[in-house]
Length: 366
Image (tube, rainbow, N blue to C red):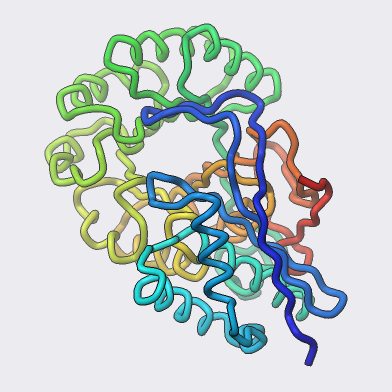
């Protein structure tokens, strides 16, 4: 059997505009690219580390190199679930850091390799031909449109971003807020004016930037501004405070930072309406799929989200998108230039690839 050769390196992605949330702003996403070479086959995985979750490029690269060092990884070609278990053990007991994006990138690269070896697309590993999410085994019964994120900024720049988004045909806008009650309200008023001649939906994401009082006041107003849902209004760890608000809320409340993996799902049931699942938080495509099924059992709605990522990682997440109620898989759309090609985007829908593995190829050097 051929040996797998692994390469890991920085992948710096420049954004079209600085991307701001309540915790800060970035102009570049400092990601990490993993390449697996197996004979003539080349496979890819991508990590989008976040300092909020204790990762950066250096920790991801160290994790990957340390995990692989002296290890024969060929067994994972036929047992990717063993890979997930080994990654979890290594992060908890050896590396001593959760390292979710590093784990996700390694597993992603092996899924891409396994798919290419078996001539099977990633989504086919999670959906059978008779699956209720598929239409006669070919095509999808339900595939949500993705939202397009308008990062937090001054009002003039936000106007420019919204104008560009509307011109490009995006009709579900995810508005980042968290400046404070008055500034956030001014942003909503301005955007609401700008979309009056369009059939648009707004979603608001605060990334934990409000307190409970502001959340209550804003929930009285958000439906007036065509806001469909509210995401992570309170800081992480404050979910219990949402219980009374959740019961009376006129729109669904989702959490993001408060939901990392399956262990968090049960604790959120009955306190929020839905959860945002990201590969870079769950650390695994398998885990993300498990989270979806578990959340369904608790009647929680599902949003599939992302960090700032190229279409390599977005393609992996999109493979699970037929199971989601909402999509926020726009990381690659926010880039000045996506280094990968092959991911289909039609009518604001990201189409899971029918090509082997992730279905993307590295088109640009970085």
